[in-house]
Amino acid sequence: MDSPYDSEKGGISSLVPENHPRRESLLLRERLTESMREGSVVPQGLIAHGRGECFDYLLGERTNDFAMKSINASAALLLISSHPVISVNGNMAALTARELVKLSKEIKAPLEVNLFYRNHEREVKIERTLKEAGAEEVLGVGNDASATIPELFSERRRVSPRGILVADTVFLAMEDGDRTEALTRIGKKVIAVDLNPLSRTSLKASITIVDNVIRVVPLLIKRIEELKGKGKDELVQIVNSFDNRKNLREALQFMSERLNQLALSL
Amino acid sequence: MDSPYDSEKGGISSLVPENHPRRESLLLRERLTESMREGSVVPQGLIAHGRGECFDYLLGERTNDFAMKSINASAALLLISSHPVISVNGNMAALTARELVKLSKEIKAPLEVNLFYRNHEREVKIERTLKEAGAEEVLGVGNDASATIPELFSERRRVSPRGILVADTVFLAMEDGDRTEALTRIGKKVIAVDLNPLSRTSLKASITIVDNVIRVVPLLIKRIEELKGKGKDELVQIVNSFDNRKNLREALQFMSERLNQLALSL
Image: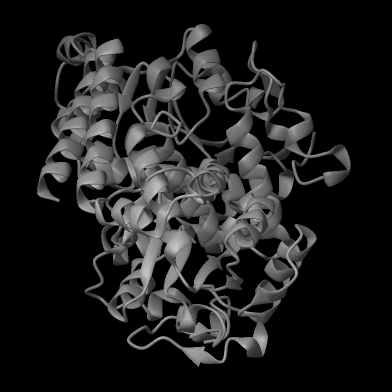
């Protein structure tokens, strides 16, 4: 082939054999690359995805105990929240639109587009992706982002007055730390999915799920379904007994031990 | 700003304060992003860069002892090689063109463009980047890539009959493992710069420098200058006493210990 961009040839997915050990990873890269080409993902989103791939490799590319604890606490928190909101960026929409729509319906949380690299064309494309995945309404697009978050200076400060502004809990992933910090500073709970346990987002969030968002959302939905029958007191207890710093330390120590084991196997 | 793409505003570099802790990293991302936009870097190159950023963070974003040992052995190997060649891809050209040209002149090694995602336009753009950085001739562009490497099936099998084909030592960075393996299988020495000590490239190379190519090339040039006065026997001894697997284990154990220390500091 002369160019991998010739989509008439079906792209790289038609070239990667089913048994390729990195097939899943290669297909995700292609999905993001295509989303960048059509405008909903920015180049910086590809670099961020690459960083995530490295951390995911250190996790063994699976959901570990510490992530399950976070998912459990997140499910409980979302169930006791009166106004949860799911914040969506380009990478999330490209990778998990269908699952996010399902989560949105499961907990009656609106989906809101919120972008570090904001422009109206991107907003509309992400909205379209979510609606094609089954969403009925998407907040934060165009003039709907008419409110602002105090003490935040990136474009992410522009939010919907019906969504993030009035949310008590915000679910987000692959985010910049400034916004997470600003949200918690004004009293909101933040559930952050982040493969990097050392990021400012991870450190500032109320609950950090150190795992890949692709694995997390289906597991979170399942856990929410399981916890729906629990009483509020029990759910509050689950949330209160969760220690985010301890959880992040466990994730780091897991990664450290994995590298050590890999070193011994060389 | 409405769009970070409005280059009339000077891009993100004019917005990142001099004291921003991630300034260097942000500027590199921008350089790569610009190179992708003008066509010499592919989207997959941004994802690869992101993976590298994560591993570099685990290295403490500095050149460690194990990397200095690799650089020392690489300098010695390049000096005793009769036909060394520097293989250049899009990311390398975007990040280190000037230094690669200097290295090329220092050891009289031709620069050859060799791309996984090959197309003529990219080849010409990379050639232009290298010539603007002072290169006189660049191999592997267009019809010059008229030879092939056996047992290699990606576009990287196409090489110059005056360069990689007849090289005894190939210097490369940020590469796919298939090509490194194919080169070593036909008897060539490969010096690979790779931030990931577990990559197939790292495992298959003769000498792997686990470090950022931006830091490596100037240090390599300096070490070559220092070793030029040494006798051949001494240089051969330096090369023969280098153990790549041991070096990779040291890099992994360093990363493991760093994660453990970071966990304790949370």
